[in-house]
Structure formats: structure tokens, C-alpha cells
Length: 157
Image (cartoon, rainbow, N blue to C red; front, side, top):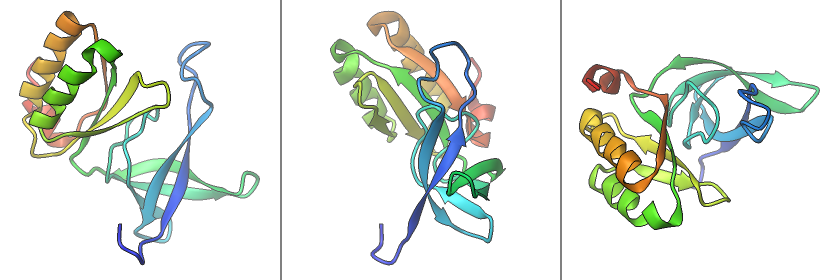
């Protein structure tokens, strides 16, 4: 990040999908302003669905919470968001697969939930096959939070 770059937290309200998931009511993602009411996301979401790194989203000011709040995605970046549940025993092999595919990731404070950013140029069909293999062989779990346009087209599985 450049010295003059200013980032803002954008709050995503998280609908409950079960009594215990997601474990939080909101998730904050870093973003840079690109327009009056639009920002570009600067990290991969752990819980928010339908957005990816570098997507452009519309926000509004929530005066009650004094926060910028997500409204809608207005332009996709081509990146995909994949979330993995990985235990310590599988971490090394998962890292090797993600490194080989030129992906990057963040790991939550439990050490189990990985938010993976898949760049547009990655062969997602091949990566997905590797991750599905690891689901069987290493016991990881996989969720596709959102697939970029090129990844949707390349996904044949």
C-alpha cells in the first residue's frame, strides 16, 4: 500500500444461515474509495458472500452505526473467493497447492478458516480438482463464496 493510500472499513451485515453460522453479525473488509459511493475491496472475505478481492461495491453511510455499509456489488474484479476449513495436519499440503496456483490467503484467528483469493489468470478448474482431491484425502472442507467470470466458465465440475 502506498503512503498516500487511504483505506476504509466497509461493514457487511451477515445473515444467519444456521443458529451458529456465521459466528458474527457483521464482517469488516478494507476498501479504497473509487467514487462518491463506491469502493474497491482490498481483502478476501471470510464470511460475506457474493464478493471477492478488488470487486467494486456500492456503500452507504449508516449514521446510527457511524460506519460505511455494503449495499451491492457493482463490478466484479475477476477474482474468486474460496473458503477452506483446514486442520493443522493438512495445512502444509494445502499451502503447497495454493502456492503452486499463485493464490493468496488469510487465516482467521482459530487457524481453521482460510479465505483464499484466486486471481483471474488462475486455471480454476484445475485448482478446484486439487481442492476436491484434498477434501477426500486430507479432510478439508471447501466453499465457493463467489466465482469470477472466467472461473465460472472454466469450472466444468
